[in-house]
Length: 193
Image 1: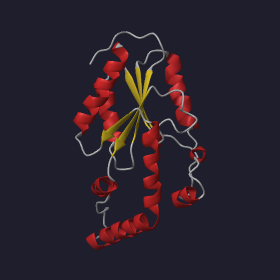
Image 2: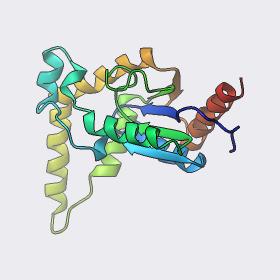
Image 3: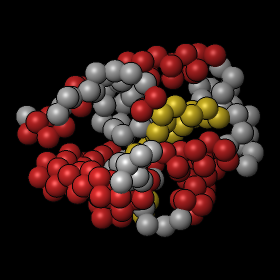
């Protein structure tokens, strides 16, 4: 896909979804489809985060407890270089975190049902580790599911609030290729007008 030349700051695309919702895979696919693009993944940066997400949820869900400073500095550095056409953020907060509110040109929310996201996480994350018996792996998974039902589900549900500040809400049950095409079409539409 080619776009008209642009002399402004890079076009910043933020992709958000619940864990297991497809944001990282989609962000990678979009980055591969946009020549002159750079991808920044929230999980690649160190920073403060609530130690206990359930307690964070109960005390009011303040996004400023997540320190995005290193990521913001990396993105700002890329923008200041002036050579990148697109910056893609694999980023869980849409425009809701104050450190990225004004930088994002297109905020995408992948709306993936929690059961689908959880199934994807199980497939992705739960394999027997070296030397681990199947019984131990199953017990590890059982404990994770117990924790999810008792506590982790609530911060997962909190992700829904980011739909309201997103420009595009995509159906997370569709294929990554379809989702990527929809994002590229939206970019094309915005940049040709």
